[in-house]
Length: 292
Image (cartoon, rainbow, N blue to C red; front, side, top):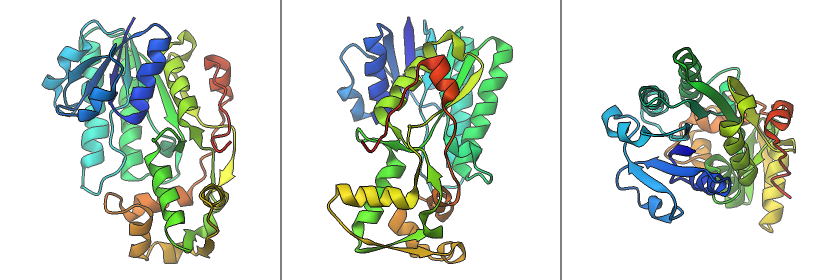
């Protein structure tokens, strides 16, 4: 069996490549031209270079492929239209290339943020990607969608890393709404196993799974864990939402230049505690506590 991993040179992508190799799956990676991170991939991995936003550049990578793991996406941007261009149009191009090449299985890595009551541009782009993947089932593509929650560990988890950096940066830190929103973070190693299984299992065809950890924790509690592990005892100050939305500096503290204020605050506003029983049943998914 040959698996193609788009975005396979990233942190999660590299770990997925290693996981698939342990399951005796041959692995090919599609990554951007000039991506130096590809040099860190296992030597058994075949590397193709192309840009998912440029259809002609990626077609060759799909030849002979049995299953596509579509990870390529952008998580952070302040450039208008960039999420739709990469995360939706790029996904459309990947799905079309897979169908043209006769690929039978397709695993799409979406995001738990598509379940938020009000979507950011990132969430909208991912949800549109999901819709296109599902529609491809009419063309014989056997799809599966996974929605990771907040990713922690192994150098990955951009959003968590930004949050951890924020709460550790100053002796006093502000949390919108007092950090009461609940999360179910997932350890990177558990996420990778879930993604691998979802793309290979016959039970997962036509299904969507949340891939989360075993522990439910509030943003405020998470901050305390982060600070404890760092040997710090900073003071948290809760601030009302109407103030949080108007303090531009808070956006820069939490996310920095690549993040809009909307995206920086979205994680504080909505809970993300999905059930994982279906993933446990179908995929043998058994995640642990990412903070243990």
